[in-house]
Image 1 (tube, rainbow, N blue to C red):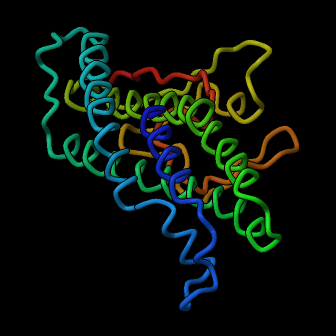
Image 2: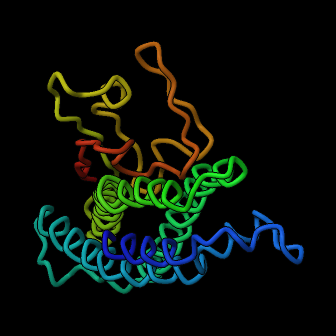
Length: 234
């Protein structure tokens, strides 16, 4: 992902000329939109993400099915559910990542253009936003989505095995476990059930966490989550 963010940065820096703003009905909004072909950017991310999601699903599924005593070859990575996840997840990640990048750039640049900031100052803002994207955001997104794909692969393998009926949430059980994960420790639900549905709110330790991104059928609960799922045999 870092490569995609760096390519985006190069293209954005090449389109920072603000002199067109206010000419022939060309607005600040038009300029921000023209900084990058956002649809193409999403497509580039999708292409980069797909092989990672696919490889993670395959490895997680094989490991999970071996973990319940079956052969790795008995895991089918091409069921309709897995193929749909692989395709749709890559698209969702790409769209969400691109939207967040666009939002951050708009926030950083929009008022600065109104304030008459120089091209040098605008370049500095782009460097800050995209520099963070290519390092911290890229790493955070990759680790979180790999963890989500691992969880999905585990669940699908357990369903295929025929010997697992549920899944149990386990924390690292140390002093670094957050109150939200600690509240979930040893929680058991059915294989097809979510620990939380999108829109739910988890309250723990006097804090609240809104599940506003997606359903939570498996770990991770949050960025840098260290929890794991274990199978509950029939």
